[in-house]
Image 1 (cartoon, rainbow, N blue to C red):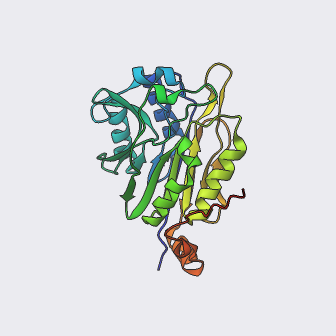
Image 2 (cartoon, rainbow, N blue to C red; image 1 turned 135 degrees about the horizontal axis):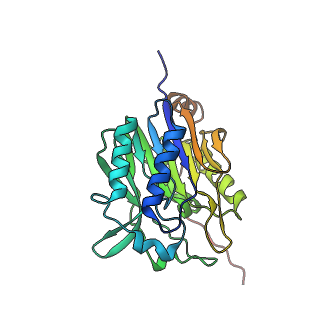
Image 3 (cartoon, helix red, strand yellow; image 1 turned 60 degrees about the horizontal axis):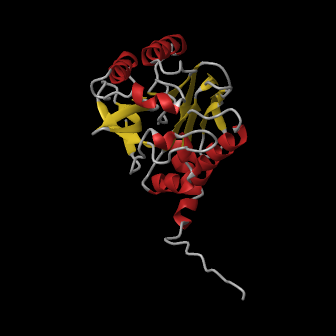
Length: 274
C-alpha cells in the first residue's frame, strides 16, 4: 500500500514595508516562479503583507473576508489546488487589531483564523501597542492532516505546542518574521518543538532588510519528527518544497510512545531552608 504523502511549499520573502499591494504582487511572482509541480499546502510568513514594522500594522489592516489579501489567498488556493496557511496579516474586528493567520481550503474557502497569542514587545519592538493578543490555539484539519497554528514569538512557549500534540496535531506551523540576530534560538526551538512533540514542523520566516538597520533571518525549514531537516531555504527569496509522510511519523510514535508518559500535573515541591 502506497504511503500518504503531503507536499508542502514554503514562501520566503522580503516584504516591502507598509505596501500591501506591492507585497501581494511580489508573493504572486515568487509563487509563479517557485511552484512548477503539484503541492498540497502553501505556507506564507508572518506579516508578509506589511513587513515587520509595528507602527505600520494598523494602516495595513483589512477584513480578511472582503479585502484584497483574502481575495488573493483564496485565488491562490484555487489556482494551485492547494490548501493555504496564509502566514499572518493584520486584521481589524470590532475596532481591535490582531496579527492573524487565515487558512483556506483548496476550493478557496476560508475555514479558520488564528490570532497570535504572544506579542513580541522587547528590544525596541512594541507589537502589543498596535495589536491585541489572540485568546485560543487553533488546530485545523486539511485533507485528513491536523495542523497546529502558531506565529513567531509563540515558539518560545512550549506548553502551547504540547497542547497541540495532546490534541492530535500532525504538523506544527510557525510563521515568523524572525530577526537575524537570533539564529540559534530559531533553529533550536523549532527543532525542539518537533522532537518533543513527535510532530512535523514547518518553520518559516521572512528574509531581507526591514528598516533601521534590522534584518530578517530567513532560514525557513521543514523539520521531521526526529528533528531532521527535510528542506530549507537559508537566505534570499523563493519557494522551498518538501514532502512529509504521516504514516512514518505514526509508526515512529508507536515504537517510541513518549507522549503517553506525560503526567497530568508537574506540581513543583519547593523546599526553602531558613
